[in-house]
Image (cartoon, rainbow, N blue to C red; front, side, top):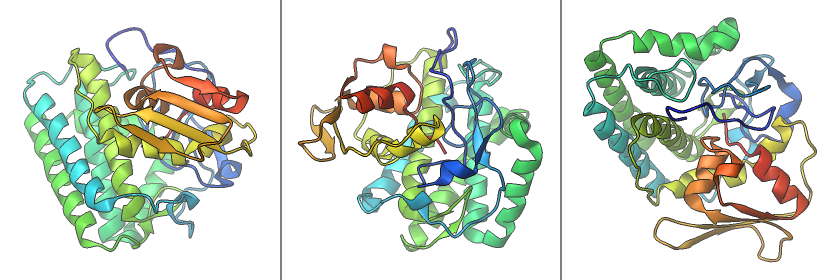
Amino acid sequence: MAERPAQKEPSGQAGSSAAFGAEGLHRSLQPLSEARCPLRHPAPDLPDDTMYVPQRMKVTRMLNYGLDVSGVDHDLALPDLVAEGDELDALVSARTDWSKPTPAAGWTIAHQIAHLASADANVLIAIRTPDAFGTVLKQAEAAGSQYADLDAAVGAAKPRSVLLEQWRAGRTEVAAALRDIPLDHGFPWYGSQLTPALLVPLRLMETWAHGQDIFDALGVSRRPTRRLHHVASLGVIGRELSFHAAQLPVPAEPFRVELTGPDGQTWAWGPEQAMQRVEGSALEFCLRVTQRRSRAETALTAVGKDAQQWLDIARVFL
């Protein structure tokens, strides 16, 4: 999402705050609006781009969308979440004009920061007063396709200094709250109960993805870090979501993903002998699964029909 013509993605790509990788969750999804955000935000002008949320926005007994989060290094993920926020803070706090458009249609830098601040506020509600989170779900359902835009517009209308301090305070409180609760403690979220084991990398992913929008809008080069491993991991473990969202059968064959990290190290997932393979730069993979870049804008390679299709439809949205 940069200050350039909107990216063109394959039709049917999008995300919502409720549709991350749960087995069978696609059966309860319905199209609402354009979006391409980990936690609801506007998309560029993508043909047939669709946001998905559960038909009934309610707290469920499902945990972490049925995903295996045993590989998440929480001791590393939480400090990395803080560092990701600090890096973006350093960028935007040095800019006095937050009215600059970003690649998300209709969204300025202020909208992007307001969206992140609002998501943090919802995290705190879910953790501290879980019974009250039902109200958040009802508000999202009532606003429907305009929820993200309306919510971000409210925050973006605030004075820059007020919004900045709100975002900073929220980040600090979220980090403290996640540090203080057990890794297996569940709290309500969109379409599933979450634990810190999943929420921490999800917050990092969203901060990184929206941060990329802002870096692109400002034309500032961004140095990739090892924090990308969290984003890449979510892209891998959420692979089935890409097929569910595209209403395609989930491939039965195992996949092998080998990515080159920022320091030249290899990050690998899946059995070495798998016939379905994806290889390339970790940065480009993260840009692809968050749909900040089209497949054609990357040098990612895929071997196998299913792997080829995955790169075409890849997403890691909530």
